Amino acid sequence: MTTFSSDLLAPEQRAAERLAREAGALLLSHLRAGLTVEHKTSADDPVTAADREASALITRSLAQAFPDDGLLSEEEADSPERLTRRRVWIIDPIDGTKEFSTGSPDYCVSIGLAVNGEAVLGVVYAPATHELFVGVVGAGVTLNGQPVPPAAAGPEWRVAVSDTEHSRELHAVPLPGMVPSGSIALKLARIAAGQADVTFTMSPRSEWDIAAGHALLRAAGGDLRRRDGRPVRYNQPRPHIEQGLIGGQPGALAWLDGALSAHRLPTAHLGLTPADPAWSLLGAADQEALAEHPGVFIRHAGGEVLALLVMDLPTRRVERAEGDAFHLERLTRDVTRALGTVQPGPEASPPRD
Image (cartoon, rainbow, N blue to C red):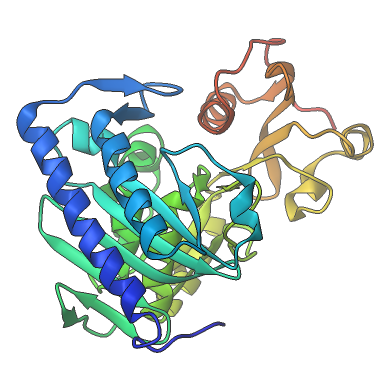
């Protein structure tokens, strides 16, 4: 694991803190003036002028201060040039735009720095509550300039979960300690600051959602990884983590891993390939037929495929849609969020052996 002294990244930390506060002030000014909300792929994926202006503010300033670094922001056009850079700033100008646009305080500015694919510096600022979370791997975490307390020792863990996933699915699951909220970056920051213990998602997320929060977690002694156990790496050609995530402090993380298995809580896996552990869940005929297909998407739990979509990526037209109707609808939402509108295909049918 790469670690840094706080002095080594002091200029980067100061710049990220300043920009997070400036972007936060910009967001509050937009709220006072009134918002016009648009949608990218669905009602679950809003965007505002505030997102774009805050992104421009942050990326422009970082490019001036650190011209040799790459940049990746949710609201800016991506460039393959960043893939040539050892250091990349990964930015979400508003993580929790839905909450921001509806008057909830549960949103934040998220600025992370990845070095050689690892999240090493994170700054998360919640403008509505004036909370500034700052962390450097190897140097600890502060909240508004004060060191955070040690992590809880259990056994009653506080599980921060998506309010959307809770309202649609998790409310029916007897998993103890669940506290729904919006922004995942803010969830990770609060776990790093000892205000919660662990989190997980069923749906995939993107690098900009989690880079800063992941750095904060690592700085506090925790971690974030894919639901299948593999690590999260940053500055990838396609900056989307293809499956659900799990993260927190070590004791809580070990407990939640077992609880998710016991409750058979699903996760999506988008762009499934033979190199992925979940590939083994497909039947032998599908493994052979789909081995070279780039558009395989599943939702699975407990060693069982709950829903399968096979899609022609250039046209986004569904070639096969199989499985339980509820899980197929959830999987289609995840694919739409990642790729854009899905063109209808065949009616859903039971999975093949």
